[in-house]
Length: 308
Image 1 (cartoon, rainbow, N blue to C red):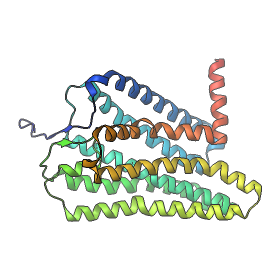
Image 2 (cartoon, rainbow, N blue to C red):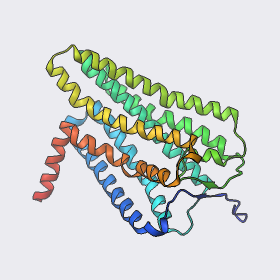
Image 3 (cartoon, rainbow, N blue to C red):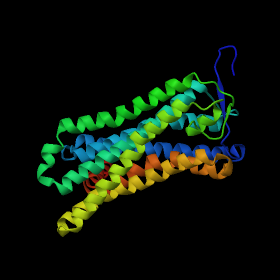
Image 4 (cartoon, rainbow, N blue to C red):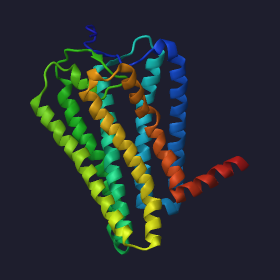
């Protein structure tokens, strides 16, 4: 606690042998950060400049990549600063801001993956109605909801928790995720209920919707021609791969809060770093390699760059 300025500081206690491997951590994180920004921005630029990619499916992919860029830009600099610092501390307001960014963008990713599933369902199962259903207005509304709904849910929770009394000032992690619940003196029943409702609206319901949608696609394509099956495989497979990766990280995030004392610190630190290292970089790699139209334009873009 900083009495002079009345600012509460939290110690991040999740780093493992930082003094021994400090510069290795810094090099790896910095390289991955640059690669993450480069890969995401390259695909965003490709989608932006090519009119044939101005379709709902690619616009939703762009929304997912914008989240990755914003997430990396907010989270990586603080992490790199902690690697360089002798004291890994964070002010409580900044900690709440990290919590807000991490979970609002994660929930936004889930909602965007839901819109992608719906888009693929309409495209494959109702192709004649696709232009009517997936109009420009519909796409804009879905994008706004994917960003606004999580932000509103999380903003309310952060505001309510901002004035809660803290009894602990050591956080067993390298950034502020749901481990911050262990810092509070008492558990608020109303906030617990609110958190469950938010989890239901932003996590469980979208997940059920995604499973239902892809199941319907699978059933319909099984009965369809080879051309429809090929289209479904080419456009749905990247989304499913990204979804599986994302669900694994979400499952870890939920489980680690419940089993915090039972998970070795080294294991917890390594798995937490994966959220920083591979997920924001994983999305553009999958979409860049597996989405045929994006891959084609990327090859042209980098071939031109080499010629120049």
